[in-house]
Image (cartoon, rainbow, N blue to C red; front, side, top):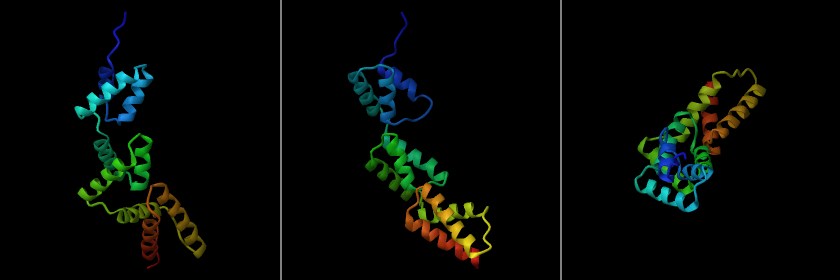
Length: 161
């Protein structure tokens, strides 16, 4: 007869390669056939030992995501998809932005500048097309409408000066 890991052992094994959210661990254990009671006990044990911590996970995720040029709207959405409640995600992002002096408007300007490098503007029509394309790309990265407009205005002022 093969040895079956306890729910805690299975969760610890699953946590080995990288951090995971509580929901990811719970879903994994459910998929492996553990009972709800075993899952709850394992989750409580792992939370008590800080092996799973959704706030800490959100901080690490924010660091990686900001490094990829994403903004808070997209980061929060992705964290919610991973099972972290919106309030925890917002608190973690706010703390991360404060501790690292991150200005999303400035980040939007930098991202727009990178995207603009491959664009050519030779007419008013080109200007409108490029502006729309950049706005959509920045929106997909999670920037607010006000940050997008400020970034595009700053970038276009530079372009036409």
